[in-house]
Image 1: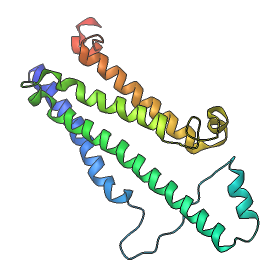
Image 2 (image 1 turned 180 degrees about the vertical axis):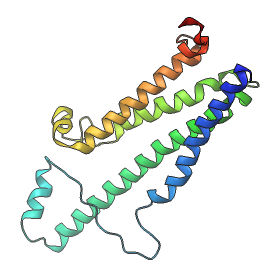
Image 3 (image 1 turned 120 degrees about the vertical axis):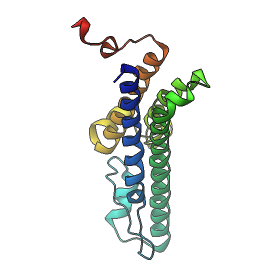
Image 4 (image 1 turned 90 degrees about the vertical axis):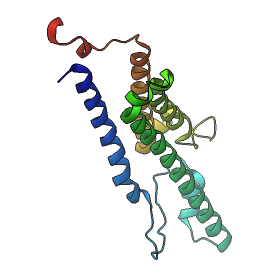
Length: 186
């Protein structure tokens, strides 16, 4: 087969894998099944003294309602963040799959899927943990040391941002790939 055809097939396989993964895992993103009661989420909120004080003693109805409202708001924010980041990744998969066909009509389409990864990385880096400064009262270094969830969010944000940056440079032609020249260089 010709190298162009092989490259097209490789891109199609990557795109299909990303799309299929998003489709297969989408139903598991829902936290409740129809007809089942919602269970409260217990996160490790290290450093949140207000929550610790509320949990130490018996709660009156107002304090319990306030705590449930805060938990529900945190859950909605978390679900939105995960769905938006997942949307960017799925959109990137679609453009990886169809880029060769779309690039014939629109030359700038080659930047769309790297941009999706860049946007997802920036979004996760900034908005994944709103209890951190500048939105919240916690400092970044303290949260990264004491909360594995924060560390995981920031690590994935850096991975997304790094992948988006490398692919953006490749799309610009500023980062030629070693394997595009074939094995003759080796």
